[in-house]
Length: 206
Image 1: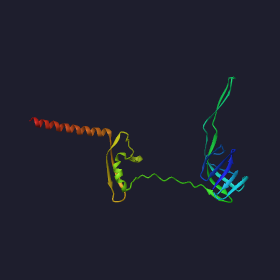
Image 2: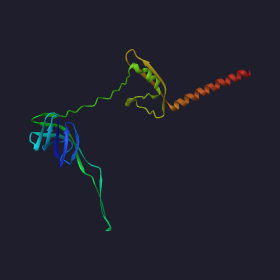
Image 3: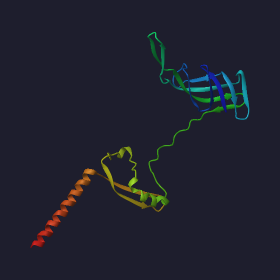
Image 4: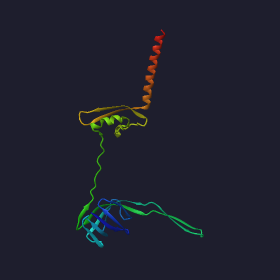
């Protein structure tokens, strides 16, 4: 169901749940306002027209906030007179959400607020996607809880293991090491390799 109502010298076509910006209204955020200057109401099958307004229809809305529109510049100029005048203006508005449309003939159309689902902490994928995920191991993005959050700016993923469970899910284990630690490990490995090479040379000389 939708309705067309008049306020602030303008007409608005709305349905339940619509968020519209109207000319400034008196009221605080969270207050409910009722519009009675209804020009038209329809349930998509039948339509009632006002002459000029409908007496048995009303639109109720809730104020979401107040604000000002983008600035416009008014510049006045008179040629050869040295007259210049520049002025800015921001039109105030009220943001409202239509809660319900009430009609004696068509009944009541009411907005029902829906809540967003909670964030899913466990991310799983189908076993059928294991091959594709294994090929894209470099693109693995780790989801870390706030409690275990670490600085991974200078970290890199050095090992990715994909193990298939008995069920339909697969588990991805990625080992993250700090870049400095990785360099230290490489230096130790290089030192050990050099020492082994020196020892081999000494054996050869003997």
